Amino acid sequence: MLAALPSEALRAKARAMLDRSASRCPQHPVTRRSSSPATPAGRPEALPAVTAAGPGTWHDLDPTTRAAWPVATAAWAQKTETVLEGVAANFGGWITYEQLAQQLFDETGYRTRMLLGQWIGQVLGPVQDATLTDGKPPLSSLVVGAATGGVGDGYVNHEHPEGFASSTERQHAAAVDRLTCYRTYCDHVPADAAPRMTALYLAKQRLRQ
Image 1 (cartoon, rainbow, N blue to C red):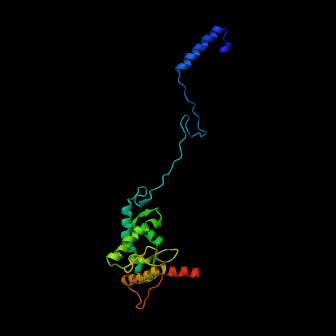
Image 2 (cartoon, rainbow, N blue to C red; image 1 turned 45 degrees about the horizontal axis):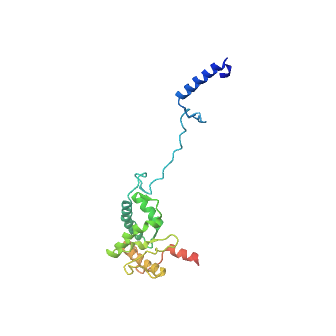
Image 3 (cartoon, rainbow, N blue to C red; image 1 turned 180 degrees about the vertical axis):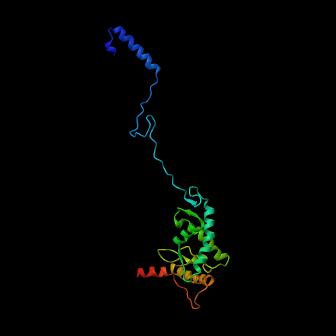
């Protein structure tokens, strides 16, 4: 357009006017239009929604709010004794750690994503303490590992409050303790009943032979 002007003086004047106009007008960034017809021009595309991970421990009534850990463990511990009394009411009964945890979740409404081995001891501990201090039947003897069918390494009882010298000794003591629980809570225990390993323990032993 400047080249079309008839003289150099007019072209110089036009350049000066353009320079003054450019200095008064702020430079605006170029807005890219979205390739999507549903997105208005000049507005950035919305980012995809990010779903935050839920709390590590919660109650079914409010799954998005973190439950206080002491409250959850207290509820589980209180329910554990009731659950195990029900297990002992069946002669030869036993329950795995995983089954116990699931039943506690379902009956209390409190749930956690924490690994089982990191919290189940806090629940069975009070039950085991009651065995030692309150003279209650050793209900924790009814809880066994799914992989072995036997009680865990932390199992203790009246006669061995500090633990056992070997796994074999611990498993035999737990068998005696389970019979004590059956005689306390089960109405139909044979008079000649003897301590015995859990059916799961015997099945695992057969697989190893």
